[in-house]
Length: 407
Image (tube, rainbow, N blue to C red):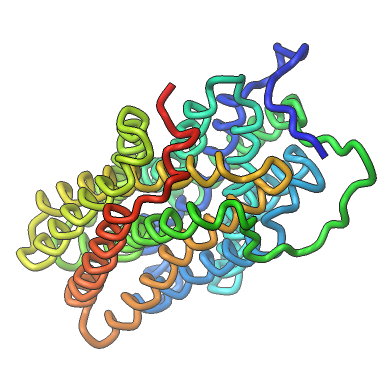
């Protein structure tokens, strides 16, 4: 099997930037329901714990897809797997459109999780494959920005439409289905970069596949991703309820904008990493992330909306720096024939960070309340991020500086 990293003679076909747009549209759907859970609670009638369970079901779907089919694009090709992910995302939107209770809500979130799991590894690998020579670092930024940007645009779009447009539980998903149709067309036109010179390898679940030559750089980068994604989990799970119950802010557009700030700041942090280089950005990103978490904890303690916003921005910047540094290093170190599976393993660890804390916060919120549960989690996250930052500062992986310089 060989991977074609350049557009070759088909220069008019969609390039890595267009495929990054497809990636963003797919990820947009995974966070689209975030500001809408309050409306679902009113319509269906369920507790804050159920919101946590719904989110956890999504994360379980992501991890299951990564473990079972994380390396499928290395065998089947990037385009077929991207099309499958778009199809799953469309089915998820249909479930929400015809939602009449918790069963379809759960089904929609599981399908969304499967879609995100396929997109996370395959979308990133496809963008990297299509990058022209000398633009691998830019392609890595395009991939991670599409991931984080799509996740941030979901709540922003849904919150705005739900607050200021009719049919708040219908229109966001109709808009997303339209975007998915455009993304499907772009994917059909994109160049396939996976070509097998001999018999196609058998398609089988690869689990947590990390080639031996990548293990030295994988461990610290994956731990940093876990720590950063825990902040994203905190905001997607706790921020909407905290804004409504503690700060009295019931405007859905504001809720979506706050969550968007975290992911937008993450994208800015990824851009900053390109200027610093991965070796420097990884420990610095952990340091900025600690500052952001401390601000979030202070906002919960003091019931301060401005501090919450500052924490969202600082934490997002730190998460973006560390995340892009780790992804760039892992993607560059992985051999082409195992790149999809290795990147998928990286995302498994990251999504464990976004799912396990959500379950913990939900369980604590039942007895302690959302505010206290958020404070407890923030303290634990600060300790984890500080430990990871100290580790990569004292013992930076030598492979981290290879292939990660800005271009």
